[in-house]
Length: 415
Image (tube, rainbow, N blue to C red):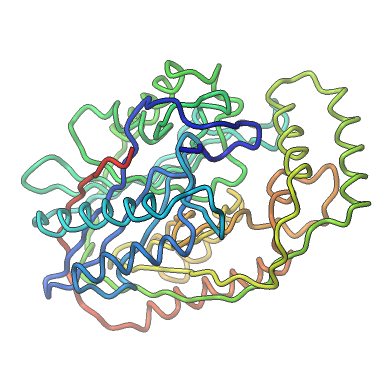
């Protein structure tokens, strides 16, 4: 299979470092109404694939498609689930993803049991760094959220981490879950864990990894697992007292390709800057921008339909976004929405589709970050998105549904 995530990598995968999975966690209300969250160990899952998986699970289970979410951990050591008309992924591959998703969801629903929920949050250093800053300014305490469900068997966990899963670089040609996989392997108590990625557009392991090797991946994974195991967990009172899900579809404008003259000017400017840079990690930022400028112009597209989702579990809310959102925008949204909802709100990116980077809103120049170079949306999309997000949270507050929860998670290998 082709591997996704790096412009500078070509060729097919050559083997498996660690298995890729689709994980499904099921939460079921006392009245029998379920909610299912599916997470792929893929670069992303575009809207078309998400819709296909939702339809398949809904047809099998009788669920409402709004109560099924599909996400991806954004590992760069896996195939893509982002197609948009590409022909290098066959129909058999997408059929396999739907089949494995249905198996995972069916078993999670069938084996659900009564659980008690606990919530823990932390900020941990040494995992993520701000990749668009110089090394001396790149330190970052990565936020982690852990929802732990205790039942009769091994604990079931939902972990929201916030970092590009890129300990392994473009030289790796082996399938790997990367960071979430290494953390899962290092967990000592046999817990089953579904991973979601958060607002990590400007976060990676660029300055925290000593090298891009399986040994270094295992080290950073142990650090993440140690943080998860050491979290102070507080009883999540009211979790599952109700489960209310909402989905809004936005049709938003797409930006056009850069004019040739502007593209050439930026190429010249970045090449001259590159000659003066000696830090290898900083060089990656410049090389990444140059790779974007070297891409073939994307097909013209006036607008794109994107899905924004939110689900209220009674004591906390998950917000599903199909974008790669900056850490600052993620903190801002979570703070404002938590205050408005009077309960914690956690952002889960790469959810309900994949639509690339959310632009910062600043004009594009050589000093712009990689996110702005790679985004194909105009700056005003930020305001449109924020308004839609707020309307989803407000709508959840008006829905009157009382439910309690059970839960389970089950994984199916997809590699």
